[in-house]
Image (cartoon, rainbow, N blue to C red; front, side, top):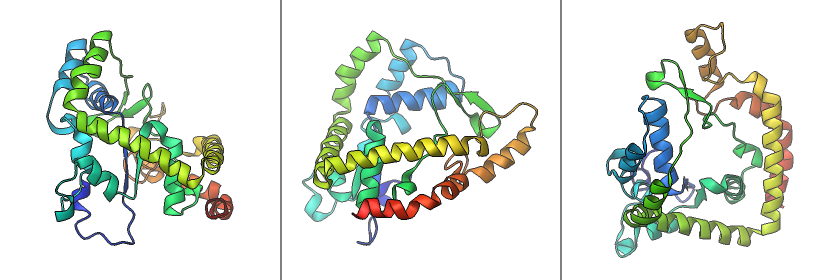
Length: 261
């Protein structure tokens, strides 16, 4: 995703600006374990994890999400915090830890059918992911912590990342208020419907989707990579979209009715 500030300087009222936020420490840990431990084969230790949490560069900079999602400061926004600019400037901000609720609310606000927010996971910790430079597959190692790491997270880490935690907690409260405004029972019913569509999609499409990783035995890497590229929008994003679209096409009209009624 491109930085929002590069996209909204002349934003049309007909556009719909949205994104997701994640618990800050978990985002940093996931980035470290995925990109460095899994893909670069870096050996993780308590000290190396603490060093990454204390770091302040590139993708693990302090208050990374607040900086990344912040919007251009206009005259009337100069006195606002980055959290206020983001909350006021985005049409919707979801919470990763509340993914199903967030996807349902996103669909209801954007007035699109639930079938449009059915997702097929391509990256699961403990599963497989692309190796560096996409030259093969590697095991995506699960992240872990120790009491010492947790103590740091709940102390100094939260202090230096206070903007991100303010944004994260505000997004939670905003999501709750939006759910109340839309009707909590209605949202809960749509969450159950989305879960049902997800299960149906996984059951019916799993055998028809060529995921980039892992590569089946007996298949040449280049041939497997070609099939995976046909199955996914880009790299390992949007895999299985053709099967999902075909499978859920019959539900689209029903889902439109669910959202608008």
